[in-house]
Image 1 (tube, rainbow, N blue to C red):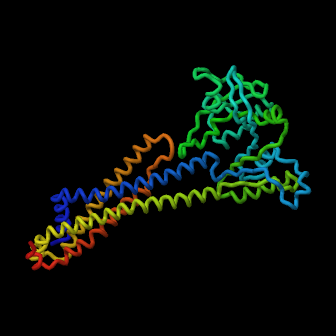
Image 2 (cartoon, rainbow, N blue to C red):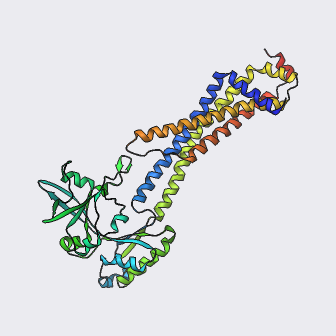
Length: 408
């Protein structure tokens, strides 16, 4: 019997025993679908965290924070002029790796419009704040250089602030809201930002804020050029080390040698995310692979049961010239083909489940389509098919033809 004849006989046997073949398919597809869905969910969880990190500037972001100087500089700490709005411009000027540098200044204030009021965070901004904070103006415009030059009384409203102050059918653009006894013209409106993780909107801070020129906040509210730090975006994560050194040197010069600052980077956070993703995917896949292994045991039992039912048939085939290799190929083909078909169906079911979940889940972590899950699930199904089919195929090929013919 030729190699291809043995394969053809195995395929015909699959078709002839539809119930047994369907049970085998079910064992495989259930495990493969669980692998695809589990890996998709785990990677969706990490993708959500990465998206939240990207929304806050990503790995390219460096934050300059106020910090107590070291003990040896404590006696001279008063020499430092402190953290000023102008520090950001100096960093942008002297550190070539820096793309954006914006001073941070916030003030909790109460906004009034007519009889409505809303307590919110008022953030002082420059033109580049829109890019650093990843803000998109839905209508109107953002803070400009001229607004800061003249310390204009203008404001851009987040979506929640707008909803709390204005009626749904009222256009806020061009209207005036009162803050600290001063009127501010509404020049821009932001859309609602939403990125849910475990039922919590990670971007709520963009909605719950009002944005004004930083010079306006300094001159009309704070009356001080002191800031809360600086947010910096560099051109490339590869330049993080050089940028950090340049920023530190620039600030030491501006602060007369006093190190009353610290630099926070996202490099370690990004590395932790990658490690978390690997751990989550490997753990989830391992749990799902247990289902496939159990399916493999089921396949082996079904194949052994099939051999017991067909001992006399095997004996007849051997008596008329079938070799051990022919019998082995036939039973191996049955197992492998069923696992491949089951794997393909399982991948399809897993992807369909992910698509359905993406449509119905509005909050929390949504699973994503991932090649890794498809490759892992399908590869596992093929491997299990081969492994679970080898023993029954070997057992069938080693049957003694005389004993097989005597079997009732």
